[in-house]
Structure formats: C-alpha cells, structure tokens
Length: 121
Image (cartoon, rainbow, N blue to C red; front, side):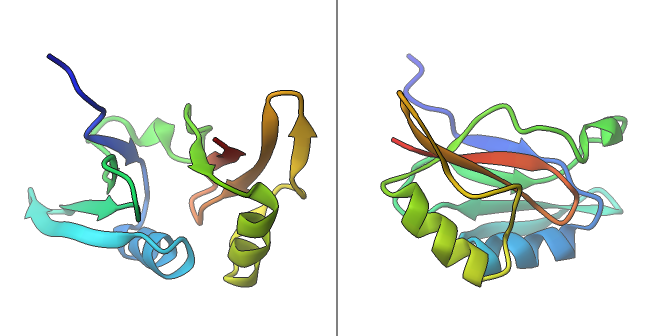
C-alpha cells in the first residue's frame, strides 16, 4: 500500500529563479530537470537525507497558488542553527525562531513569496 509522499509541488512564476533559490540557498539537489510542454519544465529536487522530493512546477490554471502558504513543514534537528545558516545564505525569514510546547519553528519565504515553516522534528 502507500508508503510515503513522493513529492510536493511548489508553485513558481520563474522556474530558473526558483531553481537557483532551492539549490543554492536551501541546499537541495536536482533529481531531474526535463521539458514538460512548450513553456515549462519538470524540475524535481531532492532534499538531503529525505525520500520526499520537491517539484518546482505550476500546473496551467493554478497560478493563483503562487505566493501562498505551503501547507506542510520542512523539518530539521535544530531550528536555531538552521535559521542562522539559511539566513547567512540569503533566505528571508519572517522573524527569528519561536519556541512552542511542541517544538521550535520559523517561517521563511521563497522569491515568489510562498511561505514555508521550518520546524524541529
């Protein structure tokens, strides 16, 4: 039966700009970058140490999803450390990490304004 989520999609207006952000600043690696249709590419990125991939693709007619909140969370072992490292690479956070009874988290944005949560496991 179902074993995992294979990939999640991040909508983007500019695939090259998004690819640069997610590889250079976030440290993801390209799994595949292939043409899909005449105007887009299927860009699948691997997250170090994870089985789930990220896809930089916006299906036609779904452009309204760009710039919204990503309904999920990227997990790390130490939010404070990751926040410092990613900030040094130019990732824009909405504020410093916050501690909650369930763990720590910080929110960041990509170049399209999509908002993501970085949280402790």
